[in-house]
Image 1 (cartoon, rainbow, N blue to C red):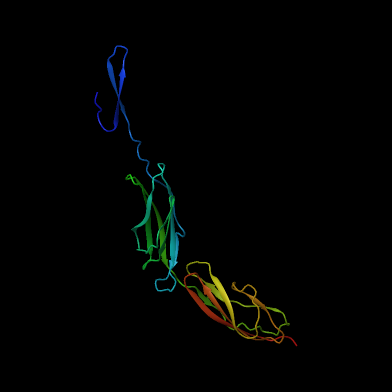
Image 2 (image 1 turned 30 degrees about the vertical axis):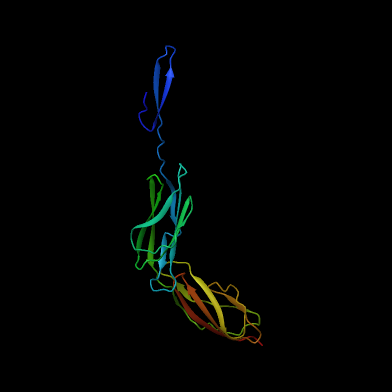
Length: 231
């Protein structure tokens, strides 16, 4: 007998009577298993930024995926809606895609989509959103002259204060103190809002700069104090 096509195999069996009986075996290819995206995430769901700032805010997107057939997969992130952002070089492995996107020019919510494809036409997609918000710098009030009212004992601990600081966006603030004048002292907790130092014998006139940052914008104020020690 004749075979019916390239995907069929013909077998011939001889019966005890001598008659030939033809059997047709159909080889059916297994169905393609589609890629599966197990998770898509952003390093931050909300990102504060300053369009005119010297530091560019960014977010890192990550997608994890797999393929039951073991096919070599291709993966990419694309923007579906919202402010346009510039993407860095994708970092792709057999099971993971990572890509960093820089801040947009305007505020808004950007929806990104991870698309994973196999060589047989199968694909999967999943989305993640990032809310880009224009940053408002921190503000501070309070006296810059913080001289003690009365003389203090030598080696007494004197506290500095950055002032009454607030951040409209509710971000965590960072403090950096630097001594710019007076006898050298060692600040205790120079990354806090209220560091302290031990007054040297004879006291002196001290000047400190404190930089207050919300991670995007910063302000600087100068704190002075004259300290006298008890004779």
